[in-house]
Image 1 (tube, rainbow, N blue to C red):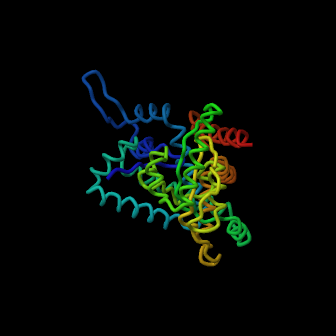
Image 2 (cartoon, rainbow, N blue to C red):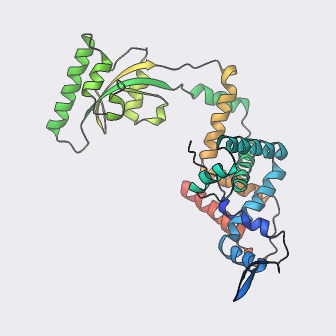
Image 3 (cartoon, rainbow, N blue to C red):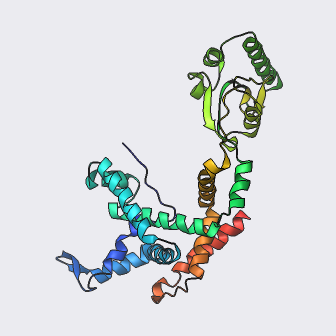
Length: 315
């Protein structure tokens, strides 16, 4: 079993710096016949390389803990989540091997990453403050995922007019065969240029409208009933498609899916890097953060400047 471990904002490999401050600065942590390395030297070197990122993480964690409703519960959830993963990997050594493939130095570093991500999620949800009206509007515009079959007759955008005409004619020929009773799956296996789906009878999905190129999505969603097939070939940048509706999905009553709608709205906010960063910036600005270490004075400034740059570019 192989998993990829990631975090929203965290450079987890820098977590060791925080632990270093708990010991006497003059403590020797390495010896050589030419001289020793003290903890103070080690910490100073770490400050020069990863100090700003680490301070950002530590300050942000403190600010988030003071801003969300139940940070203690979130920490317990993070610990339980990591404990389950440790068990799945047969112990910390097994999980550590998987973590190192993703550049994370320790199980504790990953645990703190998960905790910070949970804090950030809670903070974004609080900042977004979705009202019932917001959720209902999202629901009214929401569409269920659908599943289709398709046959692709390839014709690249750079193809000649003659090549495009031949591809379209081939697609029209297959549509006529389907009207005459031919099996869609068999035609897909024999004719579709989409090698990823041809062996499965051309099946694609479930997918939502935004997952596919516009022409394909519109044609698919316009099929009213299960079993309906596009009357004419659908042209996209890949060529000509014949599409058959397999499953239109189900739009359940609002009360049954309200929590799902809210979660989808929250996930969209979390994927919006400009919104996520600005939310963190607003919290930091309201926390009256002061940095006494002169060598780290720019830590939050760089973080805030990065947020301003992201916001400007997104506009």
